[in-house]
Image 1 (spheres, rainbow, N blue to C red):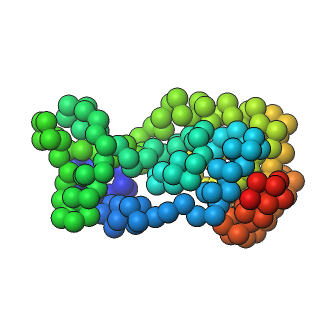
Image 2: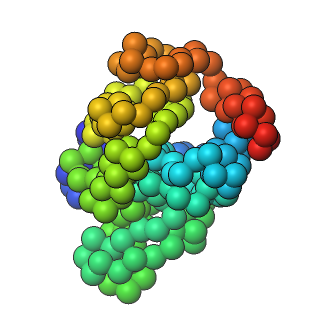
Image 3: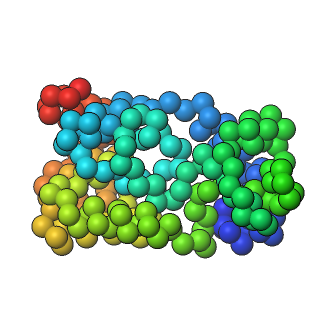
Amino acid sequence: MVVASIYGFKLRPKAFYDWVRPLAATVRQAEPNPAHISLARMEAAGYLSAVITQNIDGLHTRAGSREVYELHGEMSEATCMRCSRVYETGPFIDKLIAEGGVQRCPECGGTLKPNIVLFGEQLPASTMLAADKAARSCDVMLVAGSSLQVTPAAGLPRVALSNGARLIVVNNEVTYVDAQADAVMRDDVAVVLPHLAAELGVA
């Protein structure tokens, strides 16, 4: 809450940037793993209608998924807290990784905030509505790699179940919906999802 809340960001943006700097470096170097790629292939083959994610790394899109609902935003853009101009973050992330410090708007000098949802902020309404609609209309929901502990996203499997969907859970840890799921696989998504894609003939 000290560094990753909207209140902390407004009071001490440097503390936020000091905290996010190593994360930005990790995201910059990250590549889609077999789980991301398998989901993209399942979507391309018509088995998957959308990906709902709390991740902010953009890897689902980079893997080829087209219908991606990023509930907690994504680091590819930033907005000036003073003038509301929106910028692609590429040059700012490079500068942050190399030099550190608060990133500033080139036009007005205001503090740039990455377009990710911090504690104390509302989720993007249109994205959440789209995710809720997908949960209500799906035949099967695949919960992959989520402990389902952060709301409101954690409630989406319950929405799917209440509308007659079946549930598959792939996660290393226990989740609150395991008892209601049709299948539970306690394993790494990067191992399980390629096997699932292979079973569907899209590996």
